[in-house]
Structures are given as structure tokens and as C-alpha cells.
Length: 161
Image 1 (tube, rainbow, N blue to C red):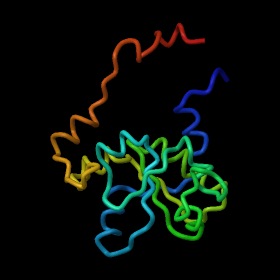
Image 2: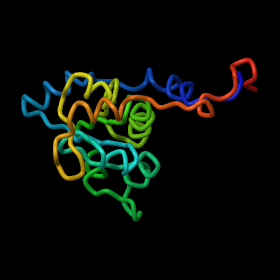
Image 3: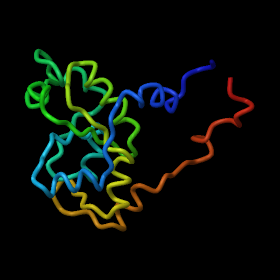
Image 4: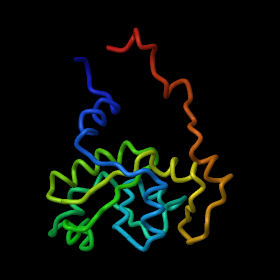
């Protein structure tokens, strides 16, 4: 096999991670079942829009946020090893990697939000900005529209090592 791509890394662990669809999570929340909502996107992404009551722990500091003794320690997360945790990202891929990490670190009831916030928004479920104002569907749609410039597409597949 050649080099591992992001999609390969996600696929490698996806079968070990349970997922929940956005509409099923919305039903859980409506019934009053509030798991810990863990958004693993970067702080700037989280500030633009997120699910109400979610906490932001970027994937880059996840491991140290899950243990005591680090500047990044998030006590509520450290203490949630037996609590249901729904891991959230933009499209449901980073959350799979993060959920897999949490499972390896002893968290017992972890699921990844399938389709991520993009699926949440597509189902017209509410998102909020850093000021706790609801984000309009138009703003959310624009945010989730991929912008891939030619340089981000890379060389043709036949030229990839």
C-alpha cells in the first residue's frame, strides 16, 4: 500500500466506532437525554457555529484534555469516562478519529455524529455562534459549501506517488 491518506486513516478505524445520525441525536436531546456533546473542530470553526451546549476540545489537544496534569486538561471530560459522549466535527470524519482515540483511552460510551454538523444543518437543526445567536440556514449552507482551489486538489491521481 502507498501512503496513508486522511480517508484511509478514517476508514481504518471507522468499523470500531459507533455512529449516530443527526436526527437521532436531535430526538435524544428533545427527550431530555443530554449526552456530553464534544466538538473536536478548531476553536475558530466552533466560534462560527456549533450545537448548543457542546464543548470545544480541538482534536489536536484531545489526549491531554482527557487526562489530569496538563494545561489542556478539561476536568468535565476527564470525569466523563462512563458518560455517553457524542463526538462532533464538520463532516463526521475527524469525529471518527477522535471517538476512536477516546475509546482507546477508556471512554465506554462514545459515538461519532455521522455526517457531522453538515448533516445537522442539512436537517435544518439549530446551530449557534459564539454569541449564542442562532445561525441562519443561509449562513450555515455557505459555511458547509466546500471551496477547493486547484492547488488543494493536488496532482492527477496518476502523478501521486
